[in-house]
Every structure is written in structure tokens, then in C-alpha cells.
Image (cartoon, rainbow, N blue to C red; front, side, top):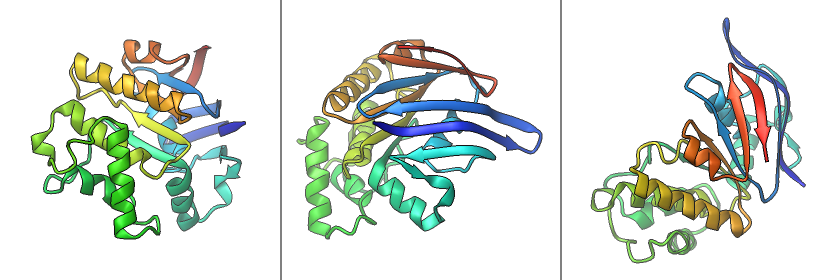
Length: 221
């Protein structure tokens, strides 16, 4: 079953064509890399796949839902249920503990505060930080901060995780740890799509899609 379907999607910003008639399908349980140089359109593709932006033309379906017919509030609910995001910048609150950074990602889930914190603790344990719940970002390494960000993304148990240059701010060792974590999450059933310009990160994924000049140029699986 497909978790993500993109059909004939184009995205233009004035005279700039970021995406040109792109077709892309991601099946449940896959681990996919979308690789390309700066300006290739890969980050725009992630924004549209994650319903953070709307295409100029074409169709996007997430878990079978046609996002073009959804209101902004319905899109927010769709993201909360089906999609987790990890970005190059960790976007952690510096004054909050790892536990609270993850729990705050569940503020609009309808869960009680205790339930949010229980979910956050379980997610941090899942990424190997069960002994760092009270640590604030300045007390963590770059790799650990990214793992907190991953825990926040998966705390709501979304079936799809979208990661935009998740190793871009990490050294090679920390980057390898994050990629190992992604493989573990994928083995546990999470579908993962990673946007990257790093060939090593791309090669670590069983399926690789190359984007250039707003077009899908090639695919290897």
C-alpha cells in the first residue's frame, strides 16, 4: 500500500520552476533517499510531500487522502496523524529538557499532559536517550540533539517520517548514529524518506531517487 503518491506535481515561484511534472510513489515500509544538489528541488519536494506547501499543479495523496481538498486545519490534523518531520536544524527549545521538547510536540494531539510526557519518555527511550530525559540541549551532543528531534517526530507514532538533511550539522560519527537509528525505526515499520545531498547517506537507503532541475532524473532500488 502506498503511504505517499505524487502525480504530475509542479511548483513555481513566479518565473522559477522548482518542480516540473514530478511523479513519485513511496510504499509503506520503505526507506528512500531523495538526493540532489542545492537548488535541485528536493527540499521543495519534501515540503509538498509533507503538506507544508501546496503544489502549483498536480495531485498529492498521503495515506490515500487527496490533500488538495483539505482545509488548512484538516491538513494540520493529517500531518499530526500521519507525518513526522526531522530537519537539519534541531529546533529544540534551549530552556526545556529533552522530555519537554518531545512532549511539546504532542500539544495538539488531544492527550493529557501526563500522557504526552509518557509518550515522550517512551520515544526518547526508543532512540537510546532514556537516561537523558532531564538534560537540556546545551548538555547534549549534536548527535543526541538530533535524536531528541527524531524522538519528537516519532512520539505520535506517525507511519511516515520525512527528514531534510538530518545529518547536515553532524560530524561523520554522529551522522552514522542517526542513520543507524533511522534503519532501526524503519525495521520497526516506519516509512522514511530522507532528503540529502550526501552520497553516503543516500547509498545507505535501499531505494534512491535523484532529483535535478526540478525533475526526477533517475531511480535505483
